[in-house]
Image (cartoon, rainbow, N blue to C red):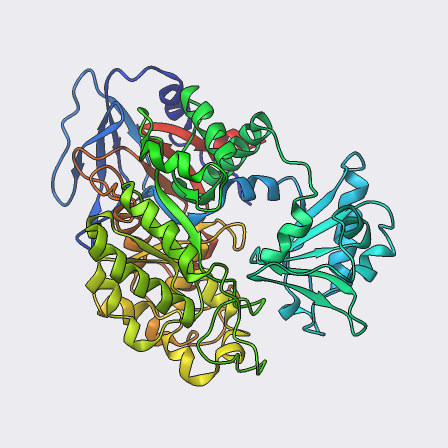
Length: 555
């Protein structure tokens, strides 16, 4: 990479370390924001403390007061701070500290990566990792404990699938967890078995808990370290806010400690995990908003089904590539509705994971009944993923005031197997962004990191092109469902902010809004859309302060 210009770095470094005291003008920017879904351009932005005072566009010229700090951005592109509406912050941080199996082209390569990781981390009691995807392997079959046992006869190994809905254990891990031929899978889970009935080493959805319960839990202080590392890395990628999907009570404590110490570089809108042991207690206290406006816990995350890749997504009819199998519902109807009702009555937004068409219909049916019962439509409940929809369910999102929280890179990652799973008819309601938008639904964009990369430019690229990074397929995968650039940017900014009741604070740049924005190395709005994913973040600003500066990373 060529060395970056020094342009405004010294001024920014001084600004980031100084007390907020004066007005700052950043001029000569190639700026874009959105207003009611339309792109708006500007050339200068005026800030005071943590707030945007004014944008200057067209022929408007800013006045340079004697007390004003002026920074010349030398034509760099500015965007509103990007928001990921569905990720897992602790998981992203742990991924930075565990073996990365993403992109492994075979079971053997996944094992080899794990061996190399172990050599670098011999002190770990458990070897953990994530990212394998058997769909990308020649065999297209689940891995087995046997391949790990050859190299890890005594050290327990636990490797989660890329989507987090399946895990791969070796025999040492299964022994510590007390797994045997007689072990039964819990409701909403499956133990994959060999021909002779022995556990193969792969555990699906709720059955994963049989292994994970044997792994020592992180302390609150350890979680603080992991969360901070994750948030700093997310800021590096241009994210100024993330919605953390499914946060347990110990992690909530860790977040609150960081917020109290002013150690949160970005904003986090947290979803309380419905299955947490302290769920009832958290609900009884009502929504939580930290005084810094950096941390909120005013929503709940529930998972209705599993994932498509592991065939855990709940379908109405059989999987097209596995007759007799319809996927998994993770809760009884009674339990699902109990979680929803408790949260709605406590004033929490309900965000429910639903991937298969059965799960989506079930969640929308429950929402319809319970929203009426609780008069909670203003809470803007959400369906997380909304991946495979019946065409007749698409209009229900706008009718119910329910937000579709979707991840564009899921479409480009799943394109090689999705139609195999659901067939040519059901695929018409899958990853159906334009159908939802045409039905007046709000789409809040995210990535589901660490399932996918947290890089939001990967998501913007997928939204506009429906292509992978090799520009395949040539015209895009079901290109009629691709977004315009304005729609895509809105989904990662204003719509994502709306989905967290934060549209009056963040999500676009205008007078009175928080000064959350990024500077990048290229014009992703007017440039070649196939290259959007290559964008490099130069700086990330939150509350009018620099929280990431690429110049700090230059040798």
